Length: 115
Image (cartoon, rainbow, N blue to C red; front, side, top):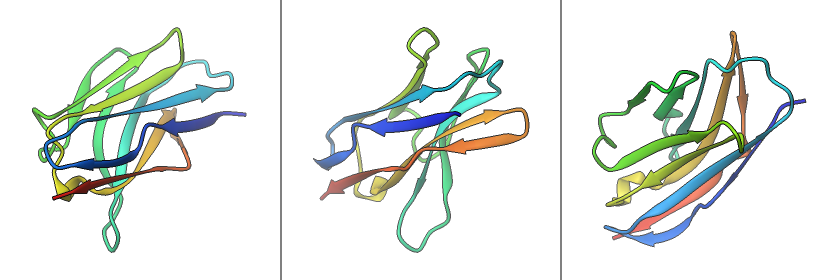
């Protein structure tokens, strides 16, 4: 059974940095992509960043130049380095794994950016 466990959320002042990590357990043949989504109160869940099984990345326009996604296929982790955080980055961040047409989700980790 596949499980995703996020860590690294917290409270930070605007302009600060946080690093989120997602550890994957369970046997998977091949990964389409892993990524991070976020959901703020009253908003829809939105893509933040994604990395494919061959290492291609894409980012939401709002985080380009500030966030960096990376994966470690040996440790089965995906990380999100978040720099120059802004209050509008405040949300619950969810790790996502896509295998074929099926998506798995972590439980989410809260990121709060104070002004």
